Image 1 (cartoon, rainbow, N blue to C red):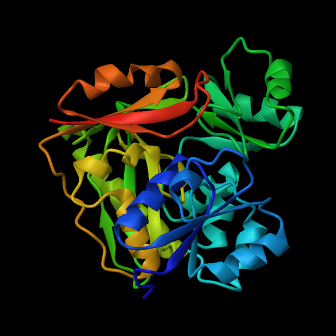
Image 2 (cartoon, helix red, strand yellow):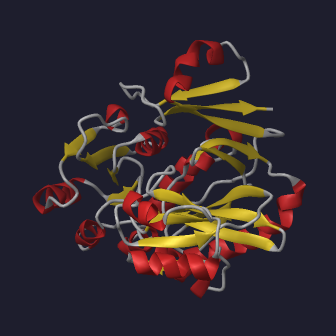
Length: 353
C-alpha cells in the first residue's frame, strides 16, 4: 500500500491530470507532474512539475526517484519510457496497456481476440490496401490512423463517391484502419476501476453524444433499452482488464446495436465521459483511480442523484461561465487554459437532477 503523504507521479499535464491531482490532494497525497508543455493545467494544482520530453531518460530517472508510484493521464506517452519507469518505480497501468491502446489495429485485434465484437475492420498500409478494404467492407466507412488520433482528428469518412486518392492523402498516407459503419441506437462507455488484487467496480454507464467527433454530452443513467448492452459490455471490460492485469481506471467505448454492444475504442486512463462522477457518483473516477494505484480499497460507484448530465465546454462555450454559475444546479469546472480555441476542451459543467 502507498499511504497518504506519498508522492504520485503523473505523466501528462492536461485537464485529466489536473482532476487526478485534485482528487489525490484531497486524500493527502502530493502530485508531481511530468510533461513537456509550457502550459500545464495539472501543474497549476500540483506540488511539483518536471518539464521534459517523455523520452528524456535522465529526467525520467530523477522523476522516478522523487515519486512513489507513476500513472498516466493520457495514452500517447512513449511506451518505452513507461517501461523505463516500470523498472524503477511501481507504474500503473503498465506499458502493455498503453502499447495496445496506442494502436487502433492492435486494440481491435486484442479485443476481438478475447471474444468481443467490433465493427468490420481492415488494416490499411497503402493506397492499394485501402481500395481492397473498401471493396471488402463497403461504404460508408471511416479511415483512421492507427496512432495519435483523438477527438475526431486523424479520421476521414469514406462514402461511395469519395476519392480514395484524396482520402489516402488526407490521412497523410499513414498506417491506418478502415472501419465499416454500424447502425446503432446510442453510444455509451464503461468505466471500470480495478485494484491490484483483481477486484473491480463499474460505474453506471453514461449515454454519450458526440458532435464533430468530440464528446459533447454524457447522461446517466443510460436509457433502459441499453441495459442488456451495458451488462454485456461491462463483462467484456472486466475480461479486458483481467487480461491486461490492469490497475487503475479503464474506459471502453461501445455502440449499442440491435444485436448487442459493438466495441469502438479503449482508453487506459480516466475519461471525459466520466467527468460526471465528480459530483454525480459516491466516488469519482479520479478518486477511484488514485485508490487503485495506491492499493487502497475501491470506492462505491453508485449515483448520488436521480440523474446526472455532463456537458463539455468546448471553445467559446467556456465564456458562458457567469450564466452557468447563476444556475443553482450547475457544477462548473474550468481547466485553466489560457487560450480559447475552436474544438478545444476548456471545461465542463455537471447538473444533478
